[in-house]
Image (cartoon, rainbow, N blue to C red):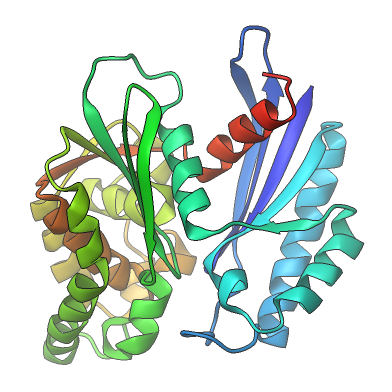
Length: 308
């Protein structure tokens, strides 16, 4: 069976299509992403903006066609922005009319659990307790477990978009001293928000998934995002990259090797969150991992359907 999931994040709309293999494995057939900034201006609550919804629905329409090309059974999921939106139900109705399936809005702990499942899929059982961190646009998830078995999962209400909207001077419009001053206030904000993740302090290994961390790694290494999975991301490298970003205007950020243009304004905020999460966990190094929420959701969905 071919199966697909479209995920609506605060910053990015994504697609993953897989083919289920005999024995429980999966083959990735296609993945794609488009920066749609669904959570633009949402902050803590409020309504999804008409322009943000239209951008997202346009991207979803294209992804639906790709899923149909593969003959895939489609699921659609949403995370932080839709969880907070007062017009989530109305937007969900539009999604269902477009895709033919109900939009599943994942609670934060379920999002964290799915990211853990995706990141640890296929890894050898070595008895080490690991953490999987997903810094998104609107929230940050962390899950811990051993040998692929989840122990605990938490979600906190901070992400790259939310932090950047709270502290706009870090977004590239005021490079140099003003940006560095704003970053000091933003760091305290991020540290306070992720403090609950300190309950997971002392894990043997941390994996960082999703676009924020992978893009930081790509910029730090001066390479493409598609090439950084499996490589280390140190806290010192994050801080050096953050310093570079704060000294650059938005156009200069977009020109950096490894930068995804739709992340140029929010990557400094994302770097602050990733750095403070590692600090809360007592970790100086994480491993970047491309398998994340989308794969984890499809694996969990397969099990729920009794087909894997």
